[in-house]
Amino acid sequence: REPFILAWWDYGWPLWYYANASTIIDNGKHGEDSYFISYLLNLDDQSYVANASKRIAIQFPEARREGYYALAHAIFNDANPDEVLNMLGEPIGKIEKKTYWFLHTGMLSRINNIKCYSNRDLKTGKRIERHIATYVTKTEAMSFDEKSGAYVAGNRRFPAKSYYRTDDKYSLEFGGKNRFFHVIETPTHLLVCNDVIYNSFLVQMLLLENYDKRYFKPVAKGKSALLLEVL
Image (cartoon, rainbow, N blue to C red; front, side):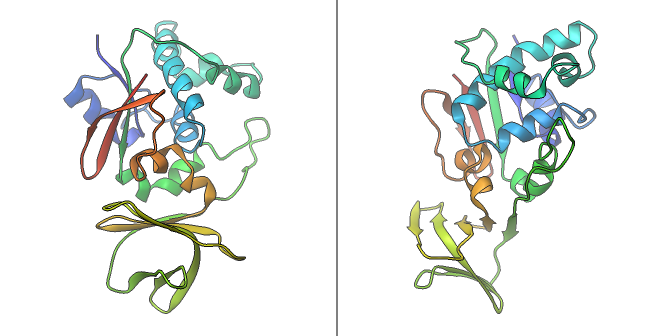
């Protein structure tokens, strides 16, 4: 049986070609169902993400067999959006189909764009809230001042709530007012983001390796990518 891998659409065709995997969105099909991937990547509830991932792995093939182009068409239809989202996160036991998440640092450079796909009230269409994140290549003009707890970019300084360095898992936290950002430093990049992005499934799994062993198991990890099995 081919595995089912959840990932942003940029990686859909490569995962199909190299891993012989099914995906919900890919390089040629990334419409309404992009909502689900965006929504889950930005959640801070690992239990919900795991349950929803397994339900999507089951329901997406069923929807296609029933003639639906997208899973969103099949499960939202005339239903209450809140009830659908609640249903996706309901506890579900182990399923037969192997289900995985593929996360890549390339997603971090697109993180604001990815968030836009689910950053809407499904009833009104209005944008829910604004989230801020930037993922940039490190240069000599960028640094982190540990004494003051500020991210320094040229002549500008941004007070941080926390600092984390991935290569040695070194971390600092800072108190005080007017601190809105978290700074995560990798060997090559800096991620500066607000609470929502920092606590998101994408950042917590990929950069902080903070996965709940009840729901996820790392299968493979490289410098830029992580493959997690959904348990």
